Image 1 (tube, rainbow, N blue to C red):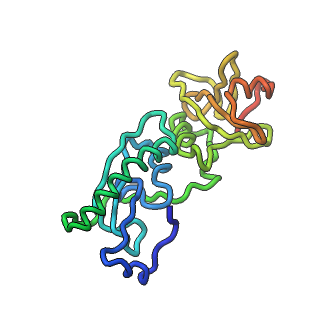
Image 2: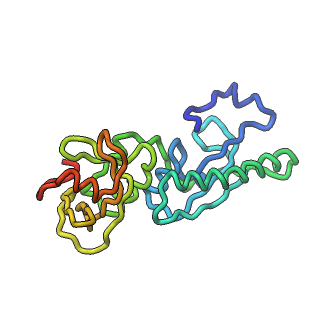
Image 3: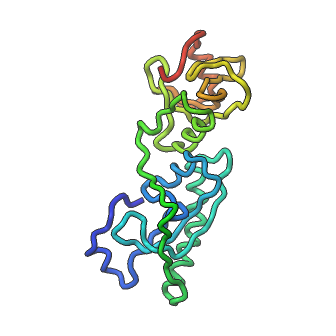
Length: 224
């Protein structure tokens, strides 16, 4: 991804202008991290757009779009892979249409504009007081990069995969409950199960294996 605006002098070079492939259904999610923000917002559908670059940020007229359903377990890596494949076909068709004159760009509507700035490391820090579904979306949206995380015993713990457990829970936000084969964490609603984690300086592992190795004591929490 190109993270800067082109100057007017550069925009004037090509006879037909610059065409860009953007991984959202514009005007939604203009910016550097459209896929991550779409997942974190809980969108059920996204897509890719080809558009004519102008001075504004991803605001130029659109040549074409392709849609992609977001699956319940999609990470940003999963979704980017599918969008790259679908987007390649869209971009090729767009270039063909521009060349033969059959395709004209359509201005983006003024309504429905949302922004998708770059996800920072701090953005990827999990807030355990948020609802379980929000925690899951942050983890999936930040995987593989920059990687969702929390802290445990003062060190960073990367969260690779979690799963909401939609049933009543008495766990306080961030509180850990370690079972024989599972590890659950309290949130602002119901608990989430930790499936895969990566402790600082360690390889990714199943959360149950991490918990056994860490010998988690009753009352210990994440994010404290």
